[in-house]
Length: 337
Image (cartoon, rainbow, N blue to C red):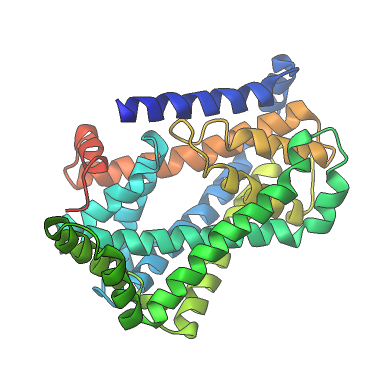
């Protein structure tokens, strides 16, 4: 029942965002923009996206090294299957899928893998906020436009900073001072009944193991620089896809759009981030003076180009691993055992 309500809420959020995006829009104009697009520009965009995806696998290899040194080429299919899972199941189930797959293939504890994946997400959030803050002067100017969504971005960035930077600080401290972190964990779990406390301590210690790659400032900086490169490559995809359409905005505007849409996709939504990706992206482009029909056609095309190739490749790797769709769904529902 809990899962059903979560799905209902996610669908309602996506529906509300889509309604906001399509309200007052002439779909015939969107169709015209789609018809006249030069889709050859999607190919280099997809190419740079997959370079970024391989870098994500390298980053995960880097974070997993203190637990198990696994080659990037072995992790790349698992990362791709995970992104496919994020795209077709709710609640970012792909993150659990790749952690469970890694346990089944190489025996890495799920809680340790999830710790590294959570570190990835926090770094991604920090970079997205950096993209937004880099454009704060421009945001102040855009806040007075007809795109009401943009006017709330400064508030969103402020609260996002508190959440992501706070989490990053905790992870860095736990990685740099593991003994103290374990003592704090032991004290925090002391009130639990003994039968639960031991299991919680076991999971907590495995989770702390997943933070060991952050044990030095140099290691943390390497993860950060890799994260920046990953998201700049994804912004390059936005830039290539833009050339398929009849508008031009600065690369910094696309960095802002990238930051905004990816922060918005942290909200619960239908699988594939329907609505939560599209509506804020359209709003940012409209604030930059792009015609709404063209902005909608571009954003929907970009969303499809981000969703379809990695989902198709993830399905290929799942088939190669002998996984069926129901097996992937079952993995997404596994606990932290």
